[in-house]
Length: 427
Ligand code: UD1
Image (cartoon, helix red, strand yellow):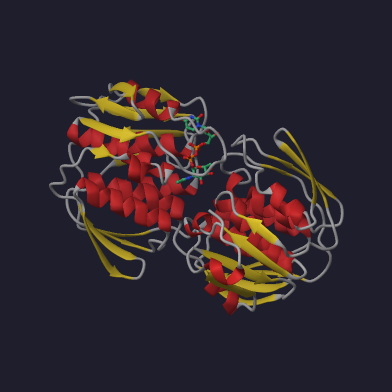
């Protein structure tokens, strides 16, 4: 077990290269099950969640080879596995994304009910209703979902909420369904577009990804023999941008797509940071005081819920009062208690956090309760006076590759040490 020791108050200067997007890599890895031959994926971030998905694919019979850092060859030909066991699915909710592909290929699947971050109840009803509309018979019991169908058939599907995971599962299932599927009210996230692009280069016929209406013309089989590069991670980019705004200084981010970051960049400018988009990447600088700002999280193209904790940490250092409203997940303020321990002044009422800016945060011992809540504490610690000890790093490791290395290179005083060395061992 390890902890992070972060001595705050150092301004950040330098360059950070952003990894491929975790939330695009996971569905695309699941989609390799549908390929008719081997595929090579570039910019796969080397993260705990990715390792879990690769273990699941291997369990199903996919041959996985790491060709180089962040570059993997996957050969699904002849894979016969049809069940996703609890030991793998409980670690990560995105494991549920194998349901659509296995069902459409094998006509039956059994997938354990998902786990994932403790940020809300996170039902899967939209995934299941959509698959039922495509003709799947669904039964539940003993912690498993079983789905069966001799041949999925295209249909019109209306999603009550633009769920990212449900849209992705349905895109994969509909790719091999007989006839045309139209999904209305679907998620428009860039990661959904990336999945659709990947499926299309395998031979799928998907149009409209990136809008709220996607059409999928089912084909008999998909091909293989392709190479595909995952899009840059907009949440990782937003985390480093917020870190620079909180600690002060200037950062250059490379391998970044500013179009995917519009609401994030707008809030940074409101907070008082200067942003420059150039051919050499995205530059952020913050010298003056931090202004307060309000946020309402929304499905894309709204402000991303995954950056809400991180921007609340930033708001806690601003001059003024910020109102942060969370509309996507109902339990995404657990990290606030930890920020309070660092001297923040935040009141949570239902899905709203009122953040009264303070002039200084103070380093202390804090605990990550989930992935992005943990990242918020890192951002706060970088700007805080004194040393913070952050425990429960397994949450952070699910979503940030090379975090302390990247931060050390830009001048942060951060190191990962065995928990025993800090005298703080947390289960
Ligand atoms: C994905 C992202 C996650 C991000 C979230 C919202 C991945 C691997 N994870 O998660 O980082 O925070 O999008 O941008 O891509 N819901 C239902 N029924 C369903 C499915 C979802 O009610 O069947 C609800 C959820 O409880 C939640 C909301 O819809 O309140 C959004 O969930 P969803 O978009 O499905 O998120 P994920 O795909 O799980």
